[in-house]
Amino acid sequence: MSKIWGNLILSEVFSKPVDSNFTPTADELAQCGANYDPSKEVNNTNLDRPDIAKVYTVCGIYLASGTIGFLIIVFLLQNIPVHNENEKEKGKFSFYLLIETFKHLWKSPTQKMIVILTIYSGVQQAFIAGDFTKSYVGCTIGIWNVGYVMICYGVVDAICSFSFGRLVEYIGHIPFFAFAFFVHGGTQIALLLWQPQQNPKYIFYIVAGLWGIGDAVIQTQINALYGYLFTNNIEAAFANYRLWESVGFIITFACSNFLITYVKLYIFLGFLSVGMMLYVVVEVYDRRNKKTGFDLN
Image 1 (cartoon, rainbow, N blue to C red):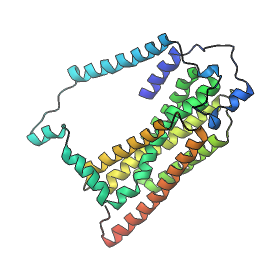
Image 2 (cartoon, rainbow, N blue to C red; image 1 turned 45 degrees about the vertical axis):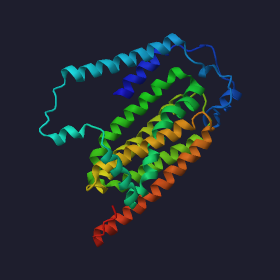
Image 3 (cartoon, helix red, strand yellow; image 1 turned 120 degrees about the vertical axis):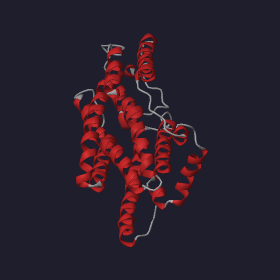
């Protein structure tokens, strides 16, 4: 819902193009997509910063939404009863959990092997939000179309997350991870080869939808995988999950203004490929573990 309404607000506020008569030249479009270089100054009106009043309007709407949500929780949500002192401690920062997080990473070969895939989870989310929207959508058809394209991504992601989360108990993790590998891998290869044009616009929506399908698989299945593999140390395992996913965000946003888009795509394909290969190793070890009774986790 946040992706749908947030992006709808964004596109409606920025709906009027900077210059409605502006059409990028072939040379300007050639600098979009995989060839987009954020460190190079581009004479492309599509990427001009919106009027500052519109920026303040969007930020004001988002801030008001967050404030209203906070007040609803504080004043209208029923308090969760606390029955003992141990439950009180759960809401506080825990040095013990911090130590356990890194101890779990150090001792668990399985955790080490799924770190790369977990980092990719953050990398791919940051790419669709930060790089795809600028290098492909904004550069080619204007920033006022970014919200509409991302609504498509959000809707597909939500539907697939709901569906895949329920199908996994019948199909298992492996087919879904394989599906995500081919969808995201194929989409990234297509982005490397595709030179975006202003028409037809539906291609941007197709790419966003495909990315949403892959993201839905990765988000739901990695969560389920962590819950399945680390039942004896669930808190430390999920702390590692959030830690390494955040590292993926950091990597992507840190290099966002320095690397050409095709270089980023090659790096992300590397993360995806290595992450999936190590996941296969984890599955093999897990099956052997069940047969021999050896605890790898």
